[in-house]
Length: 226
Length: 127
Image (cartoon, rainbow over the protein chains, first blue to last red):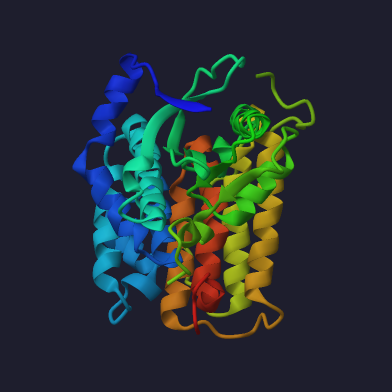
């Protein structure tokens, strides 16, 4: 098993500009240390229609109301989420995807520790001897011999489909065929219930695929929920 | 992809209701939230390929809301919670795009649950 950079096409070059936007990194860092409630608020705002902060303060009084704990982070998350929501329908979709990828990288790198963090890579393909390479790269890989990982990142449960489940499971099986462990999974910035509903409707093999939902992001970073 | 063959003929989504007084009890909050959820589901069901997912998601959402409301439907909501449920459902009613409605169908029950029973949140240590 070996890893390889994905070829760059026009779409990836445009998307790279979004991935590099400081807004994406700011949002990811804020969300990485957020509570479940703060993350749920960010999801609602980035999905929402209202662009005024007052509306969202009314919807989430326990985190944005007067005297709410960690209110400064909640307000910063709200502001960043509103910036994403304000980018227009197509751009907001791309920003949300880039955000989930960045958040995943922050959390996985945190779990691995500073020395292993350089082994966390983006947009990489995984190659196996005698197996045709998949066209689509993995959003994030951990390239540490003996404990490698491959993750795909989704904004919502709707992003879970047969193609992505099959690709992840194929990689896991091919790695096992080379007697190399490979942890594979999906990081979905959506609630567990929705992911369970979506997964129940998929016939693709998923038993060996980890699904990390909004409630379990802290575990991805090696922490217990705040 | 072809349209979902299990999907019955669709009816046009119901119009959002006029702004209502915030619910003051858990039972009233449940009724408001269920109504908003049903409107999102109707809108989301217009995405042919996702009809099966939307109907299952709506059912899971209704179950989550009923569980959050609990058995004591007469239990009073604090003022912030009453306003929050009304504001969340009003936001849901602003959704006109069916794809966004599906996203909101996933999010609304969790938001209402958080408002009614904040202790249900992962990592929460108390009400």
